[in-house]
Length: 252
Image 1 (cartoon, rainbow, N blue to C red):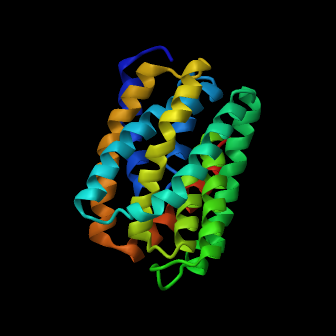
Image 2 (tube, rainbow, N blue to C red; image 1 turned 120 degrees about the vertical axis):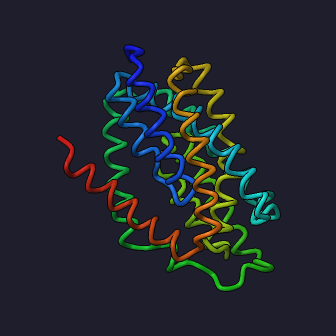
């Protein structure tokens, strides 16, 4: 990055949109990562820098959801340990991928999540009774959180979709699933950020600028999620992922 004022303004603006999308459903990093690459950051550095914004965004989002008393703290004992373990492993592995390979992986993820939206796993696996989950379901959910953490540590972009699928399997609606999602990401992101920072893969000024936008967008996303409800969140989820797919298709 050249450090021009318009570059930081664009980071803030896109960060606000990305933060809103991340809290409502996920996929905001499909906007912020390509922008940072366009502004001149190597793809692997953009991947690490993005974690600064995700950390700040989720601090605000957890605070917002907790104010509305929709955070499912009881699930953290099942969700946090495997997700943190997976995220640490994913971040370590990400340090060894090249810039060109990461850019291709990002494009492949965008296509995969477009197909995901058409499959609609959130509706298919949503359980009607979130109380007293069985032991088998808890094991399946823990495994799902490990895989989501592994992916989140490696790429992060789109991990919200994976976590929402797992929380749906756990029996949570999309509002409470979103609340658990931001709390879980907040749990593992400091570890991944430390790994990327020690590996020299974080541009701190760009990350903090992006983070300011993410914080604003995250607070807005909480308000929209709680006020608009589950059906609205599902519609935004589908529209967002289709938009990301179109962006990838139309990009040169």
